[in-house]
Length: 193
Image (cartoon, rainbow, N blue to C red):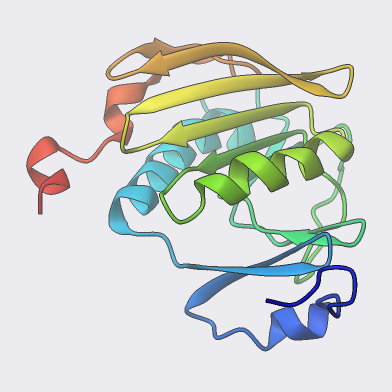
């Protein structure tokens, strides 16, 4: 094992050399790679996006005023992260740039946890998101069928609520609508395959 004080810091060029079948992120000079999301993970991401995109991105059945993106590449200071879903208030990011990555921190992020990403998402990425003043963060765990809702307060994540199972959810910053949490989970028979 290399000595962390003498090991070479990974660069964006190192990240670009990672095979496309992996998700690559760069945090504090260390390159992290994880497999593409499994079906259960993708199902949650798709379901949540389909719930918030129409009312918040398009303004259909909700207040609008947001940009919502799946797996955007974010360059935040020297870190490169890829959250599962991110949202920017249009009052803060008036025009969505046509670019391979964004350097404006989102107002809201969602990470869908999996065994291969939970440690990275909770231990390292949350610190990056707090440093960059992301206002709200959701952590969804498909295995435990839970949603944790956080708000950044004085530079620290405050847990506002934990929802589980089939709860009907009104959660910041999307409390203008009710999300049926049960619609995010694969049916039980699919989980066992």
